[in-house]
Amino acid sequence: MVEVAIRLTVDADAAGRLTDPAGPGLDVLDGVARLYRRRVNGHPDGDALAAWDVMNAILDIAPHRAPQWVVVLCLLAVSELLDELVHSAHGWVRGCGSTTGFVVSGPW
Image (cartoon, rainbow, N blue to C red):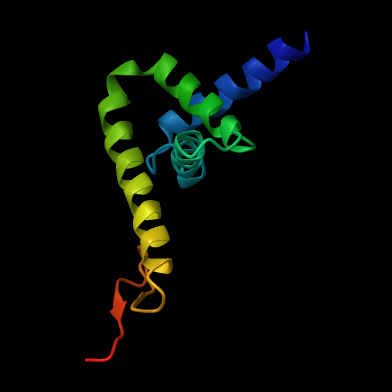
């Protein structure tokens, strides 16, 4: 009974997100991208699995919209990977992100 209630809640959330002109929401898209990154790196799913539940319901309702979400998810995943690379560059390149861009510092 609890599983049915949870599924109905997720389905209602997915339907609301599909009719929202702003799209499914960055929380869901970022959560799914975070889930992919965790699994690629062998980390546990954690709270990111909830985002996949919503995305799965969205795709069940509107499978024809899958290509657009794949593109967005890939961009989010690549953005996070770039952030990780930049932060591991030991100060040569700082501040990579969607809001700050690149700030390059070095001995030149």
